Structure formats: C-alpha cells, structure tokens
Image (cartoon, rainbow, N blue to C red; front, side, top):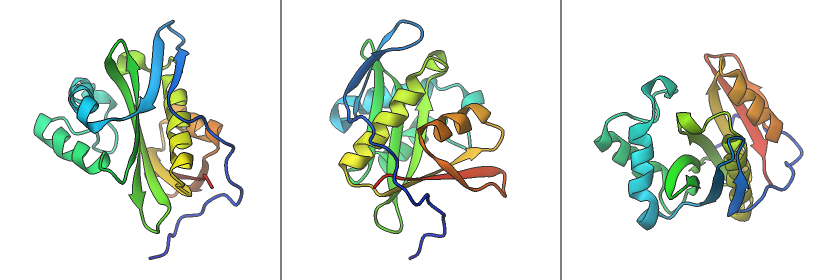
Length: 178
C-alpha cells in the first residue's frame, strides 16, 4: 500500500524521550511518561469519562464507558506508542501514535483534560510522544485537526508539522521523524 500523504523532506529535530517532569504555567508539577496498560488503564479510562463533551473532536474520545474501553483497546495495544501526563497520581493528558500503512507510519492523537489546557502540558505531551516515537523508529507521523482549531494547528506547527491537505473540513498535517 502506498501513502498518499505528503511528508516534509527533512526529518524533525530530536524530541525528548520519556519521562519528562516540568512545572506547568499554573505551577503544577506534571510528569509525562510512557503509558503502562496494567497500571494506567483505569486512570486513563477515568480521564476520558471526565472529558467535557464540548471538547470532543471528530467523534473522539467516545462518551460511553463501554465504548471508551473498546476505543482504548484499539489505541493502546502493544504496537502503539503512548504517553500520559500525570499530576498528583491522576492522568490529565494522553497522546498516542497508532501504526498505519505503510510500515513506519503512525497516526497521532492527543488529549488534555479541560482543567489542564492552556498550561503548556499539550506541548510537553506532544514533544515527549514524538521522542518516544523516535525511540521506537517511527518514521512518519500524520494527524487531522478541525480546521477551526487554530490553537492546535499552531502547536503542531511549532513542533514541525506541516499542512499536507487543507481541502476538507479536517486539516491534515504531517511530520517526518526519521
């Protein structure tokens, strides 16, 4: 299968590997680390159950606990790359790279609880996920974002993503990691 997406020619800079601990703009100590399914599954499900329905985009995350559990099963398997942002033993953010075709390609998704948004957590979560992706030899990353979501688009551009398709309702962006 061929990838019809256009990726930048040059690879992105190196990103930090997990774990990373930092103080967010609200003065909270946040740790971004690799996701551990056995230890983190319930806390991650609880984060998604608490997610404000108004902040859901493109139908995700799902709202029903059973659908959340099924969805988490598809995005946290052993072939995926996942990191979580943790504050005081609670998961407050999650980012994932889900393998796609062709081999070496992954789709990115990132979520931060509403009470933790606009504090720099998304940037650290994204950069640390991309560092974990580099560690796992992911070569290309793509994502879609709603075209009106200027804050997310700026964040993605800040770390090196480039627009590959802006013709539809969703804005497609790509990054070359390796």
